[in-house]
Length: 326
Image (cartoon, rainbow, N blue to C red; front, side, top):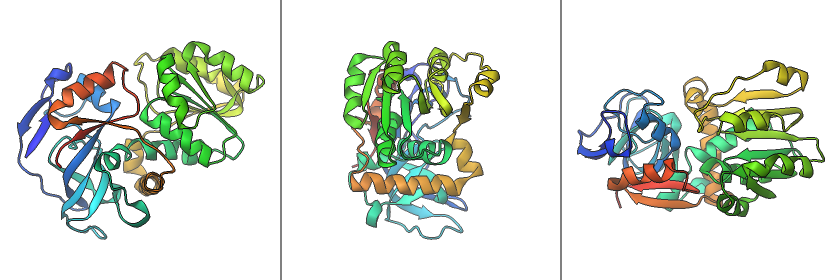
């Protein structure tokens, strides 16, 4: 089968197309004939060596296609069935991938997503947005939300899900004015570049601050955002795109009656898989119904390196997807 892998860390050119044996599912797994695979910033970090993975490594944390074979003990999935899956051990950038059955959703009934590119675009971002707001932040109707990296895949989904959950105010921040304009179409009340964010939050909340912050950016923006929390506000940490850790002062949260909460879908997939599956199934329903819109840009599998460049240079918006078959 065709696959994209890297056998050393480096720039996008370390991604090479090769032929690999077709994998067979083990107990609790399924194999899928991949139609499309999502591209995620975590995969850029894997490739760079910022997060260590075993080499050689086939990237790809999410994929869609049809069930090829089922492993021992798998119930409710059958060959030929259309599915989307979290492939959190990698492998999505290939013609055949393996996935855990309990991290797979059948695209049927109220979860039928017909467009393969769209079906590959939601398994990471939309369940993460759902999990952040529902389970980690425990967002209540009438509360306010601020999303950093508002134009990205999680950000655009989170704005829409926050609206569905009854948020009274949804604000966003991006790196550029162009991205702010793009993000505004996804349900935000207002989106601004980071340099204007503090003034925006103060103005729109009458100086109170926001109840929930979704932060995948890190660095100085994380520190600045912490000062924008309302009393009993929650700052949700689910990434570190800046790769510039700054010291956290616990007393800031104690003295200010605020909280910082981590969210890692990879960790939860191992320790709370039923929760992740619930979010995955709900995400499929939201996307299938059109309640959450995901904008997709497609690349061919052979152009995976170009997709990584586009994602890494911050020029992309929405979700990038690789077309593998079909």
